[in-house]
Length: 402
Image (cartoon, rainbow, N blue to C red; front, side):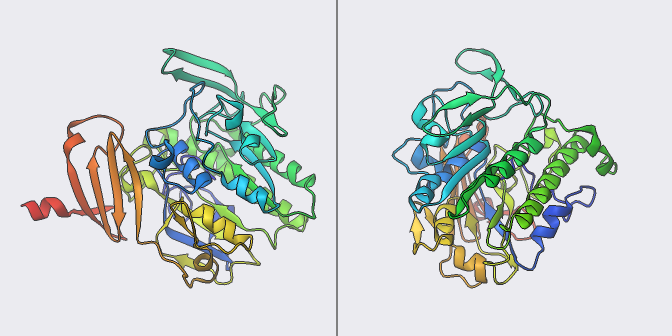
């Protein structure tokens, strides 16, 4: 899972960028490229939906993200995907970003179904120093400190001070490969490799500058380097899987947790909006599923897919017979063969005090604000008809009112 990846930010959409490994995977004969894949507008809501299979408003993560040192977490009454995979006798690993709460031991990854965790708990850290530096709402001051930890079970967390100066994209990829080196080959595995890239802060080794010389905007040029670094890391991981004889029967899913932020170099063109909005640019993302053994028919998949569907879909990959889980439906047959067993026609973008949106077929209803800024739109209701060509084409309700 990428972090804050703009809808337009891959080199088959913007030729000034450089993502050859992702392009090769996305257009492989054994890849399903999903063109109507939706997530939530922010990190924590999407990650909770991915893990629980429930919309954020059902689990209490609809209002925003969990900040550093915030007393918040996803209620343990909602089993995580990792817990269900472990019950199916899969080894479960999480490397990278967590962002689902750490104020209590029961909220930590190895108490939520993961056998092993290495990464950071909060929303963001420095890519090189792995230190958090964020304003705390309750304390009304900036919180600083290392956020790089390893867990080996039961929430036993140990900080890792030894990686100062190591770029997190490379670090997490190296850790992922090391974990698989030590994996018991008699068991299947589920690994959630949750990259920090391309979330702010904008930091990347200078060695990636040469791939982004055609990008004019300074912030986007750094962002391009971060994206290329992640692309190269994914390419390195795929080569590792091949060398370890794990590639053929592994299912690789690539997606993002939300749209990008234009102030930090991202582009969601041609969609309207960005991260932290319920416009299409904040909630529609590039997603593909690659597997030489299991994806029988490659190509595009145009049917609607929402992040809550991953829970049932991934459980189905294990061979479990399941139609739905929580708010999600099993779309594995459609991904695998391009012949849908179940279809999604509706989903909830979000339901929150500041604003809500739902989708029904080609129509999108927005009530209130599109972001968390309480503005003049808080009492406004809008109905749009979504076009496959552009973002929000017609304000249908306004047209009818006129």
